[in-house]
Image (cartoon, rainbow, N blue to C red; front, top):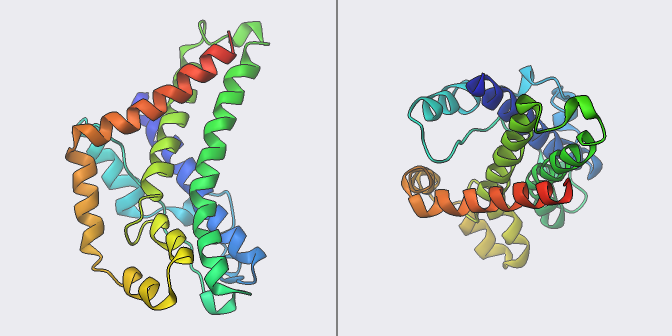
Length: 211
């Protein structure tokens, strides 16, 4: 059941992440994602075999300290944007922002559920466990995507603060850097403890609020 919850919640969270990218791009003048049918909460169009299914399953099987995964990136055409230099960081920020929103939404769920006696967290482990997983996964997605290394969202966000020539060179860094960062995340106990501490901070805070 735990594995099933992780996979379902990861798929849902990654879908919201990509929809946020596509929707903000649409608001800024690029309808590529909309025309491709990717601004939808239906998770099927967002599934990527490796990032959405195989990698999370493998990490769960290996009991990795951090669960990673992603959905298929939404198609974008930056030439359609009203102001690409300003809009691209905004579009990229929308993804992690949506995950942070889901973290607080899960916390709100913990708060609301106490008003329904039949669904109190201490009597319903499934609800409590699901909300905890929702918080954990979305904290991980937000933190990792904010890493300022291509092709993570964070790399495009900081380009707004860089001179155009430097920003272009920075975004053209070798994509294998991303793989190195992923390997560090997967193997580093320090990184996993950092992410877990952030997750536990939110969980403890929400539990205090709901007492």
